[in-house]
Image 1 (cartoon, rainbow, N blue to C red):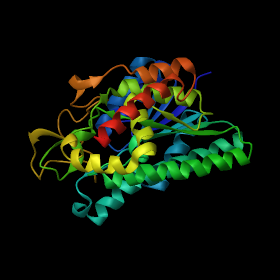
Image 2: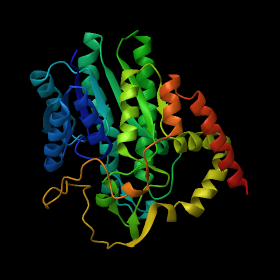
Image 3: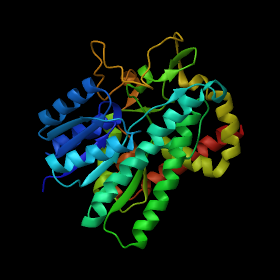
Image 4: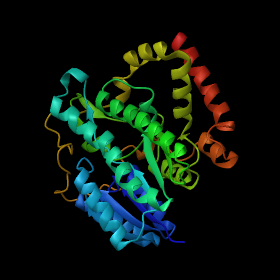
Amino acid sequence: MTKTVVVTGASAGVGRAVAQLYGGRGAKVALLARGEAGLRGAARDVEEAGGTALAIPTDVADYDAVAAAADRVEAELGPIDTWVNVAFASVFAPFTEIRPAEFKRVTEVCYLGFVYGTMVSLARMKPRGHGTVVQVGSALGERSIPLQSAYCGAKHAINGFTEAVRCELLHDNSEVNITIVQLPAVSTPQFSWVLSRLPRHPRPVPPIYQPQLVARAVLRAADHPRHKQYWVGDSTVATLLAQRLAAPLLDRYLARTGYDSQQTGEPVGADRPHNLWRPLDQQTGSDRGASGAFEDSTHAHSPQIWAARHSGAVLGTAGALGLAGAAALVARLRS
């Protein structure tokens, strides 16, 4: 049966890669994001892959806009089967250099945008007794790093509210499912357009993975949503286990390394264009696609993802790999 899928943050990055994969399955894919150039490109990707696309310019920080988008999806594509929350915004800067309105904006997109998407999807799914919500989270939702306090706070909040909603669905014996996918660092266009007050170009903390690789893990979570959460990537498993084993040591380690590891050697000006308040949709080439500027240094494969996919478990063999990595990281911290 052809599924109707909604993807927020679908114009670029992981959301774009998820939409492409659903298009390859022949799904009806609703694409929600602010950037119209990116939405047009995402719609082409979905249709060229064999799916049906419906692009709806939407700011997920606006509940009424999200609800109206959901109404339009069901009117034009049919009942929503899967809702994937991916939308992203951030500020790369020390906390003391982030303005209140900027912190609020990141929280509204990265946290309340997920809340609103979950609200409007569950309002339609629960009465039908069918549907799945997938939250695209991050290892930073359990292990924060410097220079991304607003984003890390939002990702922590997603874990909290999703856990509560999951308990309520279990209490109701609902057939509607909610799960969360904790991602590693991914090469997406966000590092080229995020608001940054760093002296050098921001980058993801290595190891860096391709968006197509983690998008496959997102679809797997949607296909098997009974698991509470999925850890994606060797580095995610190692980091989250190390957080549980040696959090104070991680604090000190990241205090020493977290600034340099999130910047390249390329200087950037303080007036660099960013998309916190509005999409960078005016220039030629503003459709950035799924992949970012770090494609040459990304991982296209992950032993952890392979093991989890083939074992049918969240950890399993993948957990053993991650535990070994966590032990190595803890030893490094202690030294």
